[in-house]
Structures are given as C-alpha cells and as structure tokens.
Length: 162
Image (cartoon, rainbow, N blue to C red; front, side, top):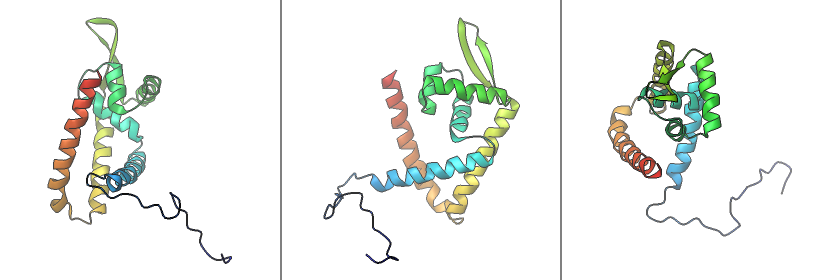
C-alpha cells in the first residue's frame, strides 16, 4: 500500500457478502440511525436534547406512570428522573401530585415547555423539508403510512410489555 492510499475497512471478512433477502431492513435501519443524529442536532439547536423532546411529547399526551414514560422515551427510570429534573429546572415541566395516589407524581408541561416542543417540531420539520429539497409533498403520504404502521406496532408492543 502506498503512503497516500486510503485503507479500505471491511465490516466483514474478505469475500463475505451480506444477504439481500426480502424483508431486509438494513438500509432503513442505517437511515434511521442517520436521521436520529439529524434529529438530535436539530433539537440541540433549539435548546433541548432529543430525549428531552421525546419526554415533552410523551408528557403532553397525558398522565402516565414513570415506567410508561421511561419506556416511551426509551430511557431507564434513573435517566428519566435526570431528564425530568433538568426540564423542571429549565421551567419546561412541573411535577404535579396525583390526587388518587399520595406517592404519585405526574408531569405537566408549562407554557415554556409547550413552546419548546413547538420550536423543536418546527425546526425538525424545516430540517426534513430541506433534506427533501422541497419535494416533501411527494414523500409525506408514503412516509406517513409507514410511520403510522410502525407506530401502531410499537404501541402494541408497549401494551404487551406492560
């Protein structure tokens, strides 16, 4: 190899060919990983992290147990507590006692929390629109169908876990 040559890194040994079977989701999974990074950067540009955004969206859906919120956000209970603490200190959520459970606490978005969620969603929408070069009207119906189906599957899976 010459001094100027760029090494080629193979994720599998030489001669290994990844199978291309029907139902192979590798490209979609890789795209989702890239989109997650775009979403994280975009949320950060609005002043909140992607996990904070997910928590704000989940909390806005109504009262939920901590375990349900943690599952919806995709974090552990201790991480959820840290996220809630940070959002509460930033004035984006407040803890509200549950009337029927002395130990229970539910989250309520403040006006600032609703505004932060709106800003993040506007920024995320604008970023995706730029990625689509303004051609979103052709893609949105297709993506909406896929996202709706996957969302329903995730909801079913979440109910089965509980």
